[in-house]
Image 1 (cartoon, one colour):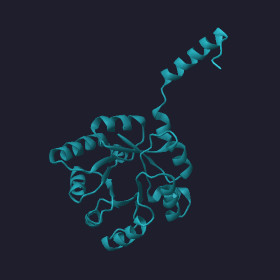
Image 2 (cartoon, one colour):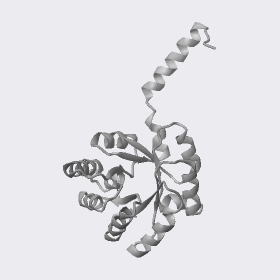
Image 3 (tube, one colour):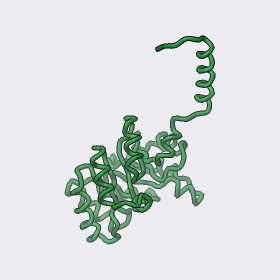
Image 4 (tube, one colour):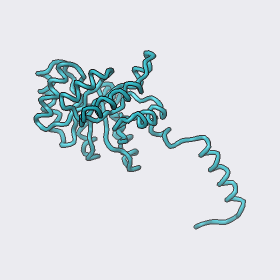
Length: 217
């Protein structure tokens, strides 16, 4: 599974890129607003920092304006992925951008039918929102499993990008369900490597080592 970080904070991207398991970045209007910075400046800075996919979302809701905005965004860097809503206008824009050789990410996907349309439109990624489905007492992971089955049935190349991830369990469950990518907030990435038994074992090892009076260095 590929790991993307879901953030517009450049400092967070620098930190996690150093670990070597960061495969891309996703941003959205809410994350940009939280950063308080200029959207285009942030995307360029991120693209200068890493050469992996960076999702930059259009703000428009109609096809014609989406295409104009996509033209601006794709010129920022070769690794920009145009993020579009999973609507009829977004799907139409996806089809045209795909024909131009531009990578796309269809976001705010909440159903298998939406994912199927995204794949037929040639989307590079489709982003089912796990956490938001869980919020309304639906099973977000069930959606990942269904999309995986449909895509495998027909050999679609669109990658399933599990989004709206809230917990470490969301990451492991999405991997088991067959998602190709998980886009993860920094706080959740931090938790993936943590386990209370690891901490307990290390405490014991440190105490035992100290009791020997030895030093490796």
